[in-house]
Amino acid sequence: MVADSLDVVIGVDTHRDAHALALVATASGALLLEAVVEASRDGYRDALELARAHAPGRRAWAIEGTGCYGAGLARFLLARGERVLEVDRPRRERRAQRGKSDALDALRAARSLLGGERLARPRQAGAREALRGLISTRESAVAARRAALNQLRALIVTCPEPLRAELRPLTRARLLRRLRGTRPRRHADRQLRGTLLAMRLLAVRIEALTLEQRELEGEIVALVRELAPQLLAQPGVGPISAAHVLLAWSHKGRLRNEAAFARLAGAPPIPASSGKVVRHRLDRGGDRKLNRALHTIILTRRRTDPDTIAYIQRRVSEGKSDRDAVRSLKRYLARSLFRQLEAPPQPA
Image (cartoon, rainbow, N blue to C red; front, side, top):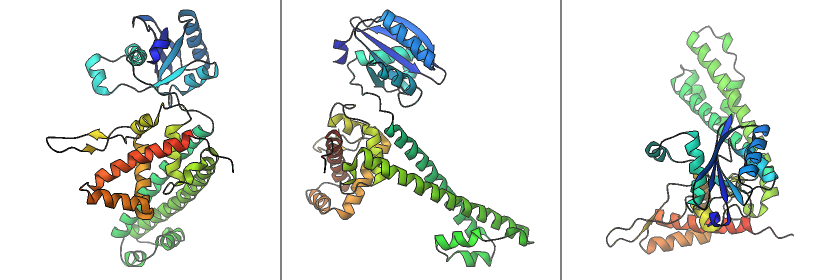
């Protein structure tokens, strides 16, 4: 256990403006000190001084939200040689049963390490944090573009004739070009004028979001090739899926082994046997974006990779379902990608 090599664990419940700290002795589990510090550089310095004063021996920090409100504190401590571990926030049902306050959450964060939970290290900043921002912005651009396209299609369905008959057969590119060149104010009919104005603005929005998406994807591809070119060499792995895998993994040593990565990906086999039926099911937990990336890779390989096609056919002929075959493939894929990431790429 990690706690066996420590004297004190410092649990931190993070928020936008302030962080709650709880110092807990590993030998007894007793609470030594509670404190609140500002979520600023001065507050981080105060937290480190408190730790040095009241926990001078072997210590570790168990911090909630290292990818959000706790990112600044985690980076500050790591830069000064402190041992920092990432803690999941407790589920709502647990909070309802045991109460909720910042002090209690900080205490739970510390005792989660004392309870033998294997905690991961915080994700690295730098290029990986830039990749996270690019992926997040791209997802919002894709969602906004999809919403605008759906709105445009709905307007075409209800727009007045003969405009409806003119627009329906057009391809997307020709439709956007046609609408961008319209002049709604030239029409006296209120319905036609308002509909054309809405369509023209939607067309302009869609084209702008398309350009934004392409620019972001170009930067994502460049970063993935710089950080993990070996991923893109794998069959079925595109730059967006590779980026999600890379962000979840973050850096070598963050996750203890491939089983931990599979658990993070929601890809471990979950027993679902009953009576004489012995089977496993898909996991509904874990990082769903990482799980979706694995699923996208599997879908691509089902169409293009002969080995994947042959494996699924063999499992189906043995009486397994497609879902069982996909579950097994996800676990295999998680193992394969983890090993690719943990092993540094060989120089050409």
